[in-house]
Image (cartoon, rainbow, N blue to C red; front, side):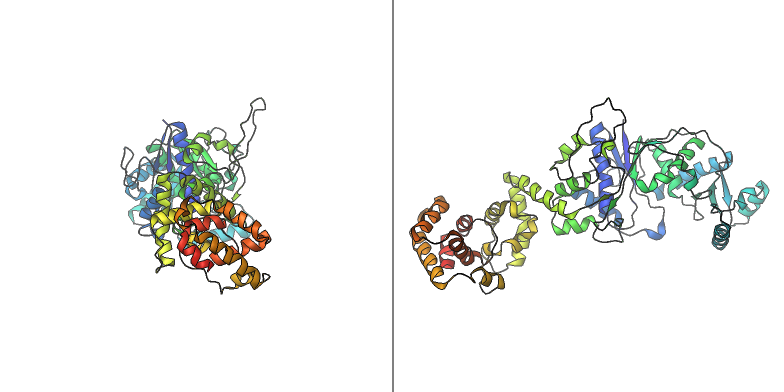
Length: 497
């Protein structure tokens, strides 16, 4: 069975790149009939942030990206915190030491820094001079007995028979051993493993068949495959996912800008739109390795897709090999259309109205027009104008309070319309509608207003601007007829008067 893992570090809130990686694990598992694990990589105690794990879990729950096994959802692969699996790493480190594939290094930080500097000045590509590799077994044993601090390094001098590297996303890869640090650290002096050792040991111990992770680990893949070979373990299949970029082209990170999932939750974006946005970022390339195979067209980055549709269409081979810019304008477009899908059902509309209610009450605390049924009507009337449910108070305040006709926007609207024209339109429409109060909900407002404008002989632009000004004080908004229907006869007539 296909088994994947999502392995975040508890160093802060989940960011968009992390959610995208979790989503890809979810989609791949669902598509292949497999399962996925969330494993917490908490081996760097200095960077641990209390509450981070709970925050990650809440963000995934909000997005509907539910893992099969992990913290709070125990299963056959526990424990799910690397800090609780130290014996496992020590056992495998000992195997590497015994086989000569690793060695103990007793150099201090100052010695290591001086060595790197000396090697760099000499023009060497090495980052360590391997001095501790040449210690005798007796010297190593004496230092260990004396309590000297040490780290365990990989010994890249030992040749291994490793098959040519291939990646699900990038395909066949060139040998990248030259890009690795000299004899990378596997076990730190605090007895905690580095990512290199921990990920290899855990992925094997948990039975992981496919590893989806960020492109930044692509250069470490040769080392990881060497570790599998040295430990005589079967390596999983790897898919390295190209990174996300900010709109300015910079790398998206926790330290750079508005990238935390919790920010998007607070802002009121729909989880279905966020998933749609993240899933399709960089999804659309087709790499034809077999010209005889007819390739299916990949979805465009603004294709409106539900989670089920994303699962059905998901294909790692359709990911671009380049980093992708995460465009906020695309999120707005997707969110608008996901809102339309949501309010197309009674349950969805009810949910949106409940979520909008607090924001409407906060903006218009004295308004008596904030019931759920009323907010539902406002949502339906705004239709495609609504990008985010939290924007209702800003987008259409006239539904909840009387318009401010002293605002600069309201004044500009009627600047070129004479008082006589305004009086003529307002009086005529007031008189007309005053006789229709009892049948308000069934009125054909559009027909009535059109007929009255023809009788008055007033230009359409003047006529509709006068009515929109009186009803809303804003130049843009839903159709005047729809506004009248929502706010009702008494408020419509009062504003016209």
